[in-house]
Image (cartoon, rainbow, N blue to C red; front, side, top):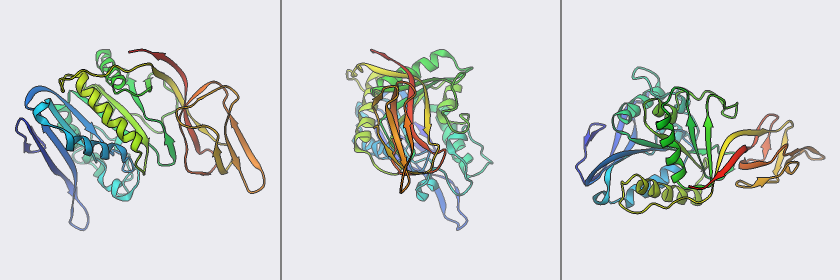
Length: 333
């Protein structure tokens, strides 16, 4: 296997830092790449982490997974880019101060562009050659606490066979809540543009890809890390890359519409609900206080599934209090 300028023999694992460019102080900045070439022929699974620099659960789980992986038992290849946004990671921030661009809006990248665009180009230039399917690991923002969930998308112009494969991979990952969104009708629950993301770019290149949103940013969540480990193992078994029986998921929630809860007042927020909770119409969601009064009480306008809630208590008018599913159905595998 020849990838990122390195030769990986069958049955071996390799690690390399791939240079992207140089900083003003003449030092290089590079992204780490982990590659396992299986002893047996098969597809290539590519996994990414920290496209946003504060998303930590994916990189640590990927490190654990790669450390334990035996390539002698592997049918196909594993490519891992566990830390894509290296300068944002150093800043402990979502995006880099170098160009203030969101890396997950810059794919397939530009070889002559800014720092962020060049990372996207270097990675996707290899990804489109090798990847048969992709898992893109994320977290919610650091101000939230979140239940692990997946996101797969129906994208206008993409072959339904590709999107169906991505949806099946997202479900076999094995978590209960799975967002499955039709971007032709999706509302404004996604801040900013959705073009240029890893998953949508992959789908446009006929590569099944889903997002695994595993906990919240800026801190490790041991439960989410274990969910990642279990999910990767099940995907490998389902795709035949590991010759063991995969675990069929039980009842799963398919969320087809979702939105952010936003406050109308500033102050201190006390959440009344928790991630993973079902909330009935008119049930209390949160209260916002000053030093004298309760300034706002937020209640559910319909039945909701709570994906994430505000972890950071200090809020300003318009801040996001939580992330909820508002339309869903349950299915068996």
